[in-house]
Every structure is written in structure tokens, then in C-alpha cells.
Amino acid sequence: MTDATNSLISIIVPVYNAEKYLHYCIDSILGQSYTNLEVILVDDGAKDSSPAICDAYAEQDSRVTVIHQENGGIAKAQNAGLDAAHGEYIAFADNDDILDHRNIALLLQALISANADMSKARWQQFGVSQLSNIEKQAKTGASTPEKVTVFKNPLHAYQTVFCKSFRMLGDLLGRNTEALYFNEANWCRLYKREIWDGIRFPEGMYAQDVMVAGELYQRMNKVVDIDITLYYWLQSEGSVTHRERGFGFYHDNVVAGMTNFEQALKANITPMRSYYTLVGSVKEEHGALDSENVEDVRQYSIDLQKKQQLLSQLTLLQRMRCVLLQKVRLLEKNIYDRKVKNMR
Image (cartoon, rainbow, N blue to C red; front, side, top):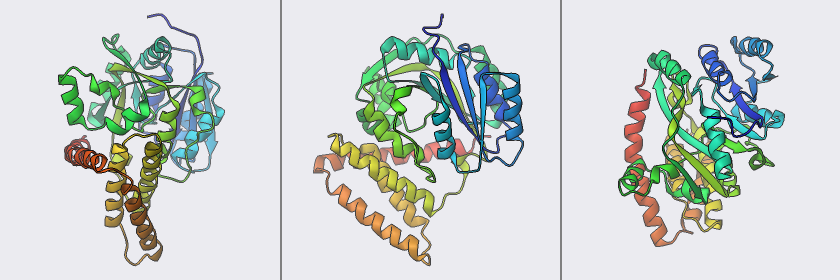
């Protein structure tokens, strides 16, 4: 495949204490078949050898830029990368994940061909024991996808298409439902740069990606999906998936759920995903509550009241649809969590 364009692509990688797997990620980016890249490594105050590893790559490859900053969290690191980016297109990667050799080339070709605002592909989770095989597989490069799907109104797809069971059923019925699915993760996507104009992640929040999701997707007119795996997501003991979570984590998800819930209602879209996020996070917030922490107790009471106010705005039919998808998704989540947390 020849490159559809020679536009500069900025790939932003927040880096924090990732010395064990960082080189796999950076090597997979620098080894892309599409070479006109600006790789922005944002060292978010890492305390291991990650900063030195980043600097070493910058000395070896002129496409690499390193930003060193005091630890401020992933949102601050992502924002620093966005502020420094010069590319016409923006991509993100986590510092311990691996990109397929043709990730950028295929995403760019699809985006330009469809004149879309964002292109996306499929990803695969893997455990540490699979690292060597995944690295080899990614270097081989994906084949040309057989199916490319273009769709409009991505905010509607984001809010309504998220249960795996229904996506599988939709595919069996020939509706190509899987292509409409995407979550708040920023990796395995390519964005037009202007989509991010005026949008930055809220710093100091756990749910920084969820907070910007609604606004980001509402700006988009068209999204293109490539039915092929182009990104490999490492599941390790140090990943967010495996960490214990406290009241603050769930409160941030409550706030993000409320934000997207309200935005969906204003856009006349039933907020099915945000209903799931909001109701689930309020419940988990209560489970993490320390009854002796007066501030947390007060905050939970406020969140509970706001949740009820938002749910009261749903029609009976909307609430029934939201509850149905919530029940299905909870069942799926139980299966998913056991599978992911048992990866080695």
C-alpha cells in the first residue's frame, strides 16, 4: 500500500514508571510503516529509568521529542503532548502497549478515504507471558482489512452501542453492529487535529478520558472503522485494570457520567452508556465510602441527589432501555473482569 498522504502524524505517549515495557511500545511506534511521525514522549515525573530511556530514544531518532515534567497524572501528560503537537493528525498510545506495524498507515488511509474526523480499529488484550509472541505478530503487520465501515453521529453510537451481546447479535443479523462500538480510550485511533482544538483533559481526575468523550464525539460528523486488530493492550499487575480503587476514583466517574448524561439528553440521545456509568459509579462510591470521613459522606449525598434528578428526566421507555442494557452489561462485566484480571 502506498501512503495516501505525507502528512505529519503526532503520537503522544504519557510515560510513568514504565521501564520494564517502555521499549516495546516505542520500538513499535518508530517501526511503523508510515514514517512521517512526531513521537512525543511525556515523562510525567517517573521515578525509575523511564526518563533516561526516553532521552536515549530522542538521541537516536530525530522524530522523538521528550517532555519532562513534575508528576501530575495522565491528563496533565496528555495535555502537554497535545500542546506540543505539530501534526495534522493526532494519535495516542499507552506506554506499555504495542502498535501493529501498519497501525498508522491503515488508520490514515481509512480516515482520508472516508473524509472522516476519526478512524479506529480493533485491539487485543494480552498478558505478560504473551509479550514475545505479540511483539513478533505486531512487527509482521496486519493484512489489508476486508471490511471498512463509515458511520455518522458517533455520539449516538457511543451512548447506545456498548453491550457485547447485542453487538454479536447485530452482526449475526447482518447489521455490522460491532463496527459502531467504541469507548473512551484514546488509543487505536487517529484524529484530525482540529477535533482537539479547545478540548483538553481535566487534570487531577481519574476519569479524564470519560469527561471529554461526549464533547469530543459530538464534534465529529463521521467516523470510520477498520475491522482488523492494530493495537495490543498489555494487562499487567501494575496496570489501572488491576489496581484497588477508592472513593475519589468512583466520584470522578460519577462526575464524568453526569456530564455525558446531560450532554446526551441535550442532543436528544438516550444516555444508555452514561446511565450505566452513573448508576454503577454511585453504587461503587457508596461501597468505598468511609462513614467517618465527613467530606466524603457529604459528597456522596450530593451525588446521590444529582443522580436522582438526572434519572427523573428520562421517559419510562428510556429508563426501561437503560436498565435493560445495564443488566446485560453487568453480566458481561463479570465475565470480562475475571478474564482480564487472570491474564498472566
